[in-house]
Structure formats: C-alpha cells, structure tokens
Image 1 (tube, helix red, strand yellow):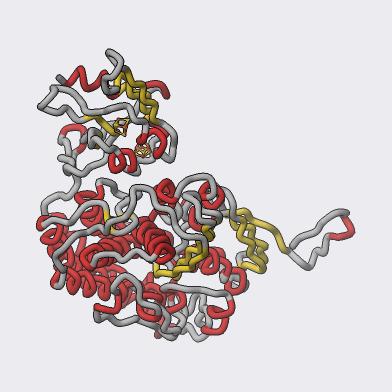
Image 2 (tube, protein in one colour):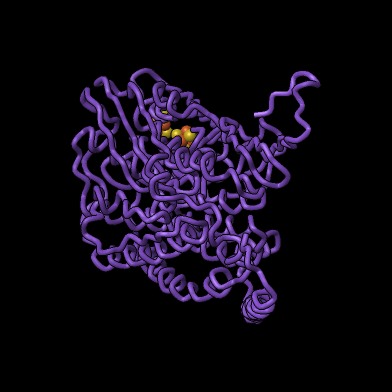
Length: 152
Length: 375
Ligand code: SF4
Ligand code: SF4
C-alpha cells in the first residue's frame, strides 16, 4: 500500500527482515536445548487431578460396603441432559429403598456436576478416568451399580 | 451483489465475481461463511453468513430450571467459559438479591482473569497463525496449557468449567492453586519479551498489520463494538472499570487503549491487557480473604417475578444477560447480548477496499468466536 516504495526502503526492509529472522531463529534455537513440555501420551500417562470430571461414579462407603443411594431420583430430575435412570428396590415393606440399578448415558452427559452436588446422600462422585472414547454408542451407557460391584 | 439473469446483464467492464470463504475454512474460527464480492483481489462487498452452529441456547433456557442452564453458559463462548458462567450466576444473584461472600468474589475474579489471559493468548496466536506465523502459536499454547491445567485442578474441566454456582463457587481454592497461579504470573511476565521478539518486532507481522483494517472511533461506536476491538480504536470503555461488579473496584488496573484502530493496535491492546490481568490476579491472591466460598442458597432457586440486566466484560467485550422471571423455577426468558456479533459485523463496513489476504488478518485481530454469535 506504500506508494513511495523506493530502492532505499527495499534495502532497509531486507536488513530489518534479516534481523527479525535471526531473532526468531534465536528463540527457536534456545528452545531446542530446553526440556520438552509435551507428554508422550500413549507411552506416558498424565496424572489427573482429584477434581477431574470423568463420568460419574457411585462412591464405595466403608460402613455398609456399598453405596448410599436411596433411589430418590433427585439426580435424574436435575440432570439437564436427562441421561440418568435410577431404579430402586425395597426388600420388605417399611424398609428404606435403595438403588439397585443406576444407568447413565455418558455420551450425552454435559459434565455439569449438578447430580453430584444435588444428591442428598452424597453418594456420587466423578471418576478419574479420562480415556472415555467408545466404539459404539451403547458402550457409553453404563450401570454404575454394576461397576461398583466390579470394584469391590 | 451480483444479479446475472440473462446474457444482457453481463457488463464486461465490471469484472466482479463472488468467492465463498468458509464455512469450513481454517481461518474462519469454526464455521463462519464469508460471501465476498471481489474485483480482482480486492473486496468490494463482504457478507457474513452466520447460523451454522445455532443450537438455540436461549430457547433451551425457557425449558429448564435456572440451575440446568449452567452448562449452556460455558458453551456459548467456549474460550471464556469461566467468565460467561460467572456472569450468569451474577445475574441470577442480582435478580434474587443474594449476597456473595467476599472470598468467592475474589476467587471468581482470579479464575475469570486467568480465563481471559488464556482466551487472549489463543486469540493472538490464532491471529498470527492466520497470517502465516506458526512458531509463536506453539509458544502461546504452551502458556495457555498452564492455565488450563491450573483451572482443571479446581474445576475439573479444561474448557467448559461449570465452576461458579449461585451464591459462590463450587469448590474452594487451595494453597496449591494459589502457588500455581503465582508461578504462572511470574512465568508469563518473563515470556512477554519472547512474544515481543517473535511477533511485535517481526517485520512480516508489522507489514501485514499496521494500517490494515482501520476501525475509526465513530464507526466502532456506531456498530456497538466492545472489548479490545473498541479499546484499539481509542475508546476507554471497560465494564470492569465503568460498572464494577464482583469486587473489581478493589483492584488497581489500567485500561490500555490505542488510537490507531488497526490490526496492530488491537493486538497491542490485547497484549497490554494480559499484563493488567496478571496484576489483578496478583492483587487478588495477595488479599484473598478467608471465609466461606458459597452463600446459603436453597438447593433450587426461585427468583421473584421481575427482570434483571447484568453486563460484564468477557475476553471479547461486554456481555449482557437479561433474565425475565415470572416467579417460577423456570426462567421466562433469557437473552444474551454477545460481543462477537457486533464486533463481527463492523467488518461489513471496513472490509471493502482490502485484499482477501487482509481479511484473514482483520478477522483474526477482531477475535470472534462463532458459537457465541449463533448461540
Ligand atoms: S444418587 Fe443420590 S440423588 Fe440420585 S437417586 Fe441416589 S440418593 Fe437420590
Ligand atoms: S454431570 Fe450433569 S449431565 Fe452428567 S449425569 Fe450429572 S447432571 Fe447429568
């Protein structure tokens, strides 16, 4: 756009351009001798923070060696994506209900944490799993109670 | 606009033709569609076609309770999700008259400013990559990565944080986070020299940005431009300073402005703003009060009937939330004023007369996120 672009400017541009190039190369060269910052992922696994939000998971409590879910359905009603389905069971009349099946469809979960916050029994948490890619849509549907059994 | 219907309509002296840039073009930040009318390589007319990522967030809000709208807020402007999330909580708190504890306000300021730095880093690096510099991009992302890791330790997520809750924040910050934030502030301060060497003093960058895409003060004000784009045109307006919210009045910081209004000015304003953000973070960490991080709010909130407007400064400009409540647990209407919309459409005015190659520079320097426009 510069109309008065003469020979003088041309030479000046070559000079400043080379200077920029040398400075830029200097930065890169210095970087070459510094430790690498990337994680070599499949061979080297990152450590997740305790607050990391994987899918939700039932907590294994020590007192009854199980979860504390009473199948109140509050989490299912609060979930903005409607991905939770809880099924409760009573062993005999007058007893408290307890969660028997707990399905989530992780593929639609928006990881908001509302279910974890809202649970009156504080029996939900986020898992630390981060390799959550599936081959089929149905692999994302998981039964948390069954997973809990497997963890026992 | 070209209107060729019959052979007689063709004017052979007028060699205009149309070019579609996008919606799947790497430099259009997602899915934005430019319909350019070109005369050779010079833009005669530019039309921006939006709507490719419309998900109907505002409509969704009318079908869910106030709490269920949290995840939507961060998905509008995914690059400053923390700021959008916090702003939504502030609006509802204003509507209900909830007093937020001081510590929670400071934590919100720290996280929002970290998010702003991350967003500016991404914006700048995308801009320089758009005009052909790949090296600074990697350095910028290295820095941004530190912020994402830091915010992940408290919120558990890297982009869609969902960290603010009505009445405060979800988890308290610990000493490790504060130390990490301090280390990051020191680290980024030491990196500004590198960015100056790599970008600001680079001859190619200078040649491609100075005097390109000048937005004059009047045009910027007419189009409702906000954020660094407005401050790059010499208007000293920042919601954080002009209408302080969430304890911003407690901190000392400058509003960097530039008079030129070109791509370089917008870039320099963003760079200066990052330094100011670091100052704010440092002050907030120094004076972080003790106490709870969440006020006593009911599990599900029921605001009184009425309406409320709250505006706050995201990384791209002034955002406004307008909530109308009819006294139930479900909002009657939520309207979002997104800064990218007005920032983008100023390009209608300034693009004619520029080369196609300059379009990428101008677009990058305005730093737009498309999902925020479409919502
Ligand atoms: S997980 Fe908690 S909120 Fe959900 S049904 Fe069980 S007890 Fe109720
Ligand atoms: S994290 Fe949110 S979206 Fe996911 S299951 Fe819980 S409430 Fe539903």
